Amino acid sequence: MKRIFLLLAMIGGLEAGAQQLPKLERVEPASWWTGMQYHKIQLIVHGANIATRSVHFSYPGVQLLEVHKVENPNYVFVDIDITKDALPGTFPIVFSKAGEKDLKYTYTLHARNNGVKAQGVTSKDLIYLIMPDRFANGDVTNDVVKGMAETTLNRDSMYYRHGGDIQGVIDHLDYLKDLGVTAVWLNPVLTNDEAHASYHGYANTENYQIDPRYGTNALYKKLADALHQRGMKLIQDLVHNHMGLNHWTVKDLPMKDWVHQWPTFTRSNFREQPVYDPYASKADKKLMTDGWFDTHMPDMNENNPYLCNYITQSHLWWVEYAGVDGFRLDTYAYNDADYMAVWGKIIKAEYPRLSVFGETFVHGVPNQVAFTAGNTVNRGINTELPGVTDFQLLWAIGDALNAKSNTWDDGVIRLYNTLASDYQYQDPTRNVVFLDNHDLSRFYSVIGENTAKYKAALAWLLTTRGVPQLYYGAEIMMKNFSNPDGLVREDFKGGWPKDSVDKFTAQGRTAAENDLFNYLRTLANYRKENPVLQTGKLMQFVPEAGIYTYFRYDNNKTLMMIMNGTDKDTTVRTDRFAERTQGYTRAVNVVNKEVLPSISTVAVPAFTTLVLELKK
Image 1 (cartoon, rainbow, N blue to C red):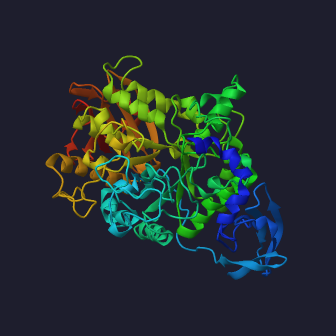
Image 2 (cartoon, rainbow, N blue to C red; image 1 turned 90 degrees about the horizontal axis):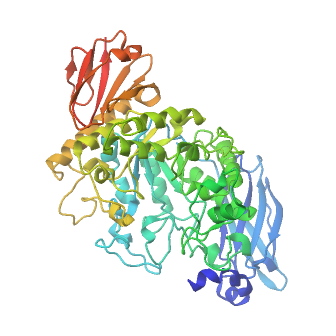
């Protein structure tokens, strides 16, 4: 803890620190590309007293614009312009000082990545979220890396690393494709050289390096390529708001305001309201946005232009290098809104199709809408954020299936009411809908391990609007409450060479697990093959007596979904849905292929969501 309070002192003790640094430790970004719209880049250069040296280079089409010296003489920030005339190649950047030998760094300009990249993840996709350390261990040789702050491997612990890695994900891509998944979102995989609980990845200590316990940069690119070869996509999880306490720029701060400084350790109040509240106290807002997320997660100062350049360029770099298709933005509400809006414009200008969605762990539709693009609720800023993780629909589906009653405001009416508020978004179909994730209790546990309810929720997830997301193991009914979080981050059995069972195979699953797996697989693949559930319009009817009915339709197909949110079997008369059922006389149950010869009435078992393709 003492180290946290002494961050300010790091600037004052630089002479001793400089003696321990290499004369030229690193240059980032270590490479760039020709022909980029973002062609004026800022190199961060770190080395012992590097600011005492002049900087020069000569390469056709590349111009040295400015060299910035800052409080810490171990840094210089070098602005260069890679003009349209520059060709791929290498050139030395020279750091000179009278009476001393020149230091040289060979800089590389690549030709642009013309492969598959930045496709965007849309309502046509099904996302599968993976915590890599807990999914599958494809390479046991990288389980422990000597010299890192954490070298304990213990699968019996919720907090130590378990050995899962990128190769383990690659090894199971065919399994995911067969399930109906089209996009893979990994929790952060950048180096997280922290001494405790480094497995989750949300306290990165490098911006341009994959954690060696997960693999290499080249292996990450191989994952992207392997996904693209299967017609699938890769989502990268980004953390703007904070870094790890052991991040190299935090251990040796370039300047005092690289991070938000407080006289004593100060945690965020975790209240999003002050960032849009017209009556908010400035002190409350500062505490929300500038307070630290945790003791080992320094809050980055996004009003510092050098920091902003460093972060933004690293994100562009990964898209161009690896072919990333979309970004998920962690702890979105805690960021500086002005910076995030500028960041959003930069990303969109370079990669117009790349999709972005932000984590908005809030309660209330307007609270969530306030963080989305378009200034549609008069917040006063266009955040440029296309979509969010739709927590409001998560709360609603939980209430719909766990309500003790289905009265005026309870039960399935929560789903109806929440979707009825979609008018506030610029485009609600860009929101990611989900039942659980790495921070939340497993939904199977939330609904009391009731398989009928679980199937009802999954059917809703795959037929409502937006981009559906599954959390790894949802297909085999993995359970537990997030108390603590490690309980919902258990290993996927079969992902380790010595596992006694393999849940990736039908033979390794129980009869109940196979039943659920096949149910989900049938719906997911139906969704993948039918545009009506991807881009079709949605129409919903006011729920009555715990029954919620909605339709997805386009010029080719109409689907009727009937959710029974009660514990009683019921028969639904469909005459009041004539607006959508007119011209249709029968239906086919998408899951079990049962033919309903008449749709004038439909029998719906307790806690069931029927998915019916209407026929004339």
